[in-house]
Amino acid sequence: MNESNLRGVPKMVSLHVCRLSPDTTTELLTSYLKFKFLEVVCEKLESRQPNIYASFKIDIFEKHFHLAMDKE
Image (tube, rainbow, N blue to C red; front, side, top):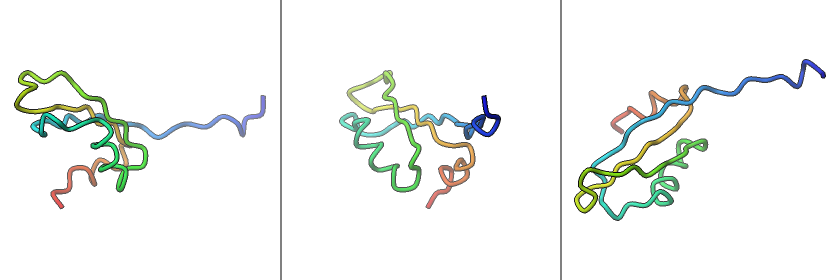
């Protein structure tokens, strides 16, 4: 095995996003976030009150965490 084939991958972090409209889909949220985070993975979570809001787990590269927390 050639040592040059051995590479690491960027560390991911998970964020919890909640209080979105109940009709928000994983596809809609992913396409919205792909503009800034090409690596984004979204997973819809079971909300306590699914008729009132939707919750999601969002995975992005750790190096983009500061961008995700920016209010802008």
